[in-house]
Amino acid sequence: MLLIYTHIITNRNKYIFNLIFKDTLGVDFELTSDAEVFRNYSEPKLSYTTNQLDDELFFLSRPLLFETGIIEQNISVFDYNANKVFYATGKPSVLPFDVFAASFYLVSRYEEYLPHIRDEHDRFHPKDSLAFTNGFLNKPVVNIWILWLKELIQNKYPEFIFPQKKYNFISTIDIDNAYAYLEKGLTRSLGGYLKSLFNFNMPEIVERTRVLLGWQKDPYDSYDFQLSMIRKYKLESIYFFLLGDYGENDKNLPIESAKFRTLIKMLGDYAQIGIHPSYGSNKSKEQLKKEVERLSKVLHREVTKSRQHFLKLTLPETYRNLINLDITDDYTMGFASQIGFRASICTPFNFYDLDMELETKLKIHPFAVMEGTLKYELKIDAEDALKKIKPLIDEVKAVNGQFISLWHNDTLSDQKLWVGWQSVYTGMVEYASS
Image (cartoon, rainbow, N blue to C red; front, side, top):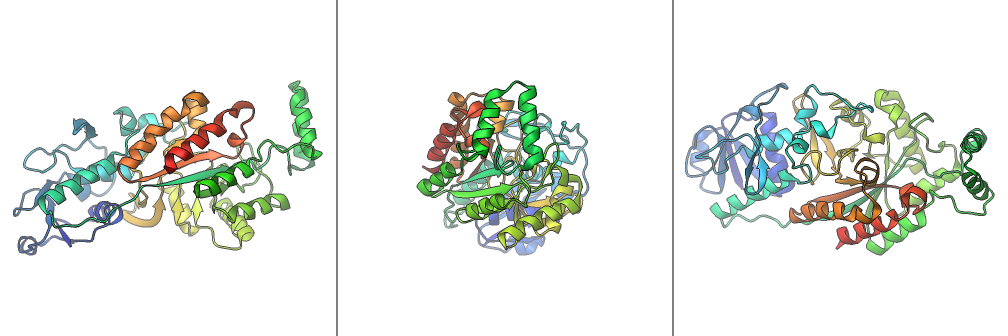
């Protein structure tokens, strides 16, 4: 048992100790603020305070984990062990920075509570993040720091045993629009024909007609390919279905479509299913509740997983709304316009509500790459995409973390704008699964 001393036990330091030692390193520990109990303890121990008490591993603490409320932080990033760190401490601390405060700042998404300019979809922009501006967005630095902690403890207490952690890969696919032409109803189909006619897009008119007559497969129907990948690589997969009411940014099929419901159930036989809360639900708790209930009714079971459409995430409101509907796991933590690690970590972690100053039971699963980010935001061609994806996988493997990818059914069609991207997905899965 590892004993940790800190002069004041707070919700913040309890949270980060739990994340680092219990959830990530898999070891039991106890917290104490009793100096005498700590001094008399003869087994492995460390202190997180302002002055060393004994011959323990001593980590000098900065104020963040003993504060309440959200205030502007004075952060200066510097290099240590070929990585970026901040909250400098200096000697005699065993690390020259406050690893616990720095980890909490990044994982709690503290900076997203501070005043900032939001993008056109009301999202926090990656260019405002500490990780992007200091060049470590593509590194899960919190996991790297945790391995430094593990090494320090092992060197000091060789008899202390850490369980072996394993890397894993999860393929996630968002179904924003299950079919390009099928099941759209008369009004939307006629509207599609008129739009194509207005744009003189005869090939699209021909394609729509052939699909509706059953002479050609719908271009967004890449599900046979997806299932073949699941079987071949024994993929752990999750599908997120958009079930919102039709709107400018929500254009999936109506839940009344029997073919759509059958698709959801069929994919649920091979993978986990989650809700993809619509763009319109982000400001409406009632709409979110309706969508979760729709999916639950189709599946005949409780819905516990989610990912926000357009990755719309406002802290803490978005997560509070999910918690109120008994969502236990969310997969939204990532940026739409940059690849990498939004929370600087590649293992699941519980959401800490900074406004309420408490750890919640909502588990956050960060993803590292979305295909749309590569193509539309970073202007990466299919031929070069794996050069961007593989280094992220390598980073996650190096720390025995969890690599999560985000794709869409239409991008796996290998048609039109997405020619060549099916091969990118295949290459990513092969590399991530090896």
